[in-house]
Length: 214
Image (cartoon, rainbow, N blue to C red):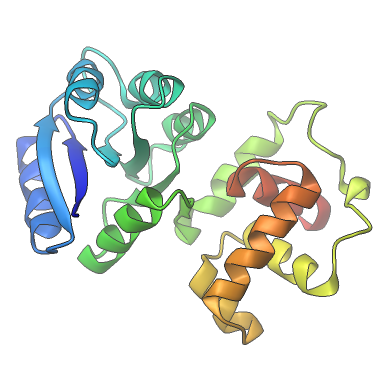
């Protein structure tokens, strides 16, 4: 079965370009296009895509609000497709429940891989932006976030290395390459790290790593 994708962007030319990229992959099916956040929520309810590719700055209802409505109702996973000047919106979208983000300048291969990663339930964080977003997140951390000194003693040496990679915004393949281990092993370590830290997302783990090592 192909993965169903909804494209959300207020520029028709952008939607057309993304559609061409997605339709070139036989594993993906574009089930619709929305030009604003309100349409995105409505079409997500009706079409139930596996992934919503979400722009942020749109009329009627912006991408942050739309992302919150979609994820709160557990209608689909949301992957933000953004530009460099969208940091404030981007952080808001992640707080609203987006599974991650890619830059609009990403290559077709990166976009296709990102959609499939999000569909599988994993986070997609573009290293070119992650450091800035995590830095911004530091100013908004609540008391519920463990301080730097509170890393669990149960973390193994390898798990600490993986956590450091998360803090640098590295993807699983990049961590695997750096550590000389397989991607499946990295996924296992990431799951264990998140469980030991008591967090539910890759971004939350990255925040803790950034707090601890800077």
